[in-house]
Length: 259
Image (cartoon, rainbow, N blue to C red; front, side, top):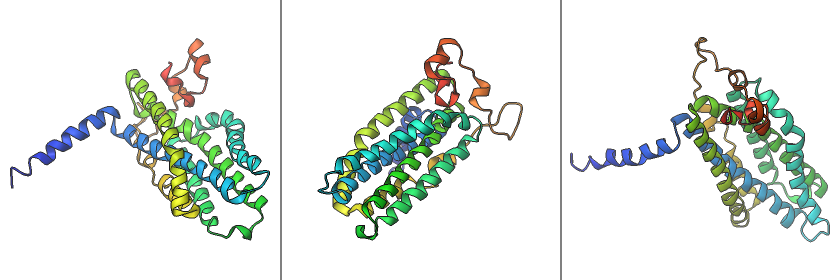
């Protein structure tokens, strides 16, 4: 019995240590996990809504392409209208609290839309369904404009050293690119296998949990001020000259990697 118990810990060391090394540290691993699951869910959710509009709400209608494009326009409008100002507020707010609040908002909205999808389609006019979908997509992506900069700025706190920060940025980019490949193909099987309602509910439950890993991050105290949250990245590091022009003046956009 003593000999058979030996391989277990060794296997854990072999697997866990390379994983921790690849993901830099425990806090970044939690943040990365939240990003990976949430981003895949985002793409699967958006694609599910597009399929809902195209195959159910606007099926056989001449204006179906315009209705489908409305989902994409709602995404673009949120980025265009909210994105330029979100980083300014994120720099002044508590970043961990910002991530938690935006996740709760997105989780509630996604859950409500999933519950509403259990209603028969004829209960509401088509224009009302489309209005609800466009509004939910806009608010979800508007909240995401606050979550993204808060996450980028948090990386500057939990990852130390320029080499590790560059690695963290690369891992984040690779994760997002991978999610764009994995997320959309998941939407169609979910929609046509388990149905629209359960596909939306699955996305809401798996990617919008208020207890996401971002809520379990531990930030170190600011030097000289024990127990207080770390200072805003913009107060600690200033991007100067061409570096500032290259990546933007807001540190929440990732300027720490160019400083």
